[in-house]
Image (tube, rainbow, N blue to C red):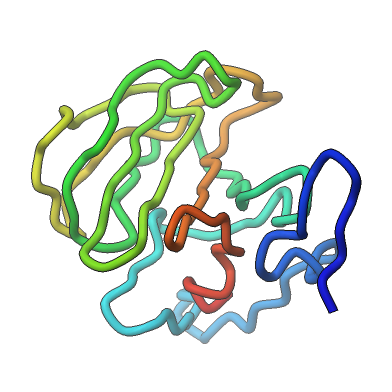
Length: 157
């Protein structure tokens, strides 16, 4: 059954899974073992979700230290690397093979240019607090065929 709110349209995929905390088990060496989908990586060295995906927030906010390097979740080509006028501040959008795009918002620094090919180890920018932001974090959105989907479903978190 699709839920529809007047003026907003149907809920994005996975939008019913919001609120609460993410529980992770820490291994003895201090590393957190996470499993993403094949070919997908976490964009940050550590993951601390400060705001989940829901109807009016079509992405995940990941709290991180100012200046921490950000890498793309999958290899691809940079579609956009500029200051956004829609609250994202400095942002990068990467188009991936197939039907996926990923958006990285609130960056303190952009390290790539439009049209650039990026691998999973390419630093695309640094964590910041530009745009409509209350502190340093990465805002990550994933779009599948133009539709926002819950990044946690792809990242396995």
